[in-house]
Length: 487
Image (cartoon, rainbow, N blue to C red; front, top):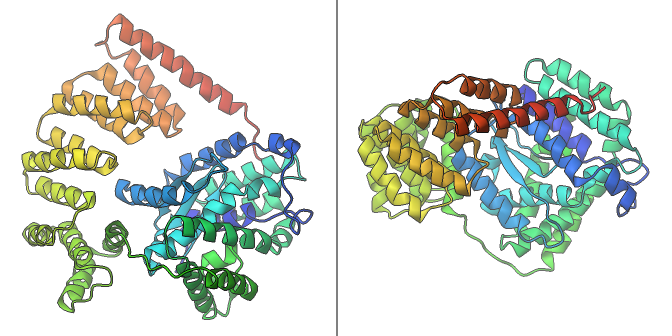
């Protein structure tokens, strides 16, 4: 299957970022203070953020709070076992059928939807995340530039340009990436197995300490190796193998480590099964999805659980506009006593499509205290309140929510929508600006703040706040313009 342009460039990015320079590949030395200062964690985070700002705009980016929330819960369960690092992580998904995952500077870890669907168990998916987390915590990117100085930072910025260019021209993107790194890339990739072995070892420990089945790490990589044998052309093999070279030695080393540890069978979580069902429903046509899940139900083919199959069928029916049939499946989910915030948001969405906004509000008001950290429940509640023509209730909720989650761009946008319904133009544009600023879309934030200045419905205090915030954002724009440009 043809790669999405952005995803294809990210495959190249993963390989480049995980490849050690020839001078340090064998020994994998610890970084001294000089190397740390040359390429600090803060610098890595800044570069990662700049790339993420653009990835979030790409059509391949899965802007689904339930899928994102699940990946971050799973990833944080693993990263919480790291005691020697304060590294922050952010996990996200890209809609791409290929099997791949990748770590970017600053702790940003991407996962292709194809890999999530190909994972035979939650422990398999966790093993991939543990491996990528280990690339980050071991600062493999910093080791890459240990001997290269600031010139390598410019090369990394060139790679960022390649990622952005991929949205419009994959050929241009690949050319930019290769030109920015030169012929040394291939030589460095040949040595990346040292980093891979280190990530295997540390990732396996993370997996075990997080109470997952460590045997599934070996099972996943062995299955990938079997897939790779089906491809005559090495460049057509699964993307994860091209960017994470898999050798017999690595598999043997992994197997030896696992054999010495006690067996532990770990059941999959319901959320893992529901997320996979949701991703399957989003692929292809609604009717194809309905047919697939109806077939599973008829054959009693429940690879995970009956609840996951009925959830997938309800989502597919909802997507196909068959509301009565979807409602029947939701009632079956309730009969099975399946408990998940994803079921609550599914039923609320169904109620909205049935024209029952009050019913959706009731469902999500009941769910919110039971699942207080679920962002999809919070977003759904605000949208349902607005649909029910209860903007004052929606405003109160957004104000309280943003006290706990001030960096949630989507909630700022929902608050802007709420202010618009209330006719409060200054606050509408100000909230919209905050959302744009959090996404790194600073020019758009400036436009919104300038509109707030001209709104004509604010008091002296509110206008002063807008003026002050506009100065801050314009300064950020100016500061970013002074940053080193890729060459």
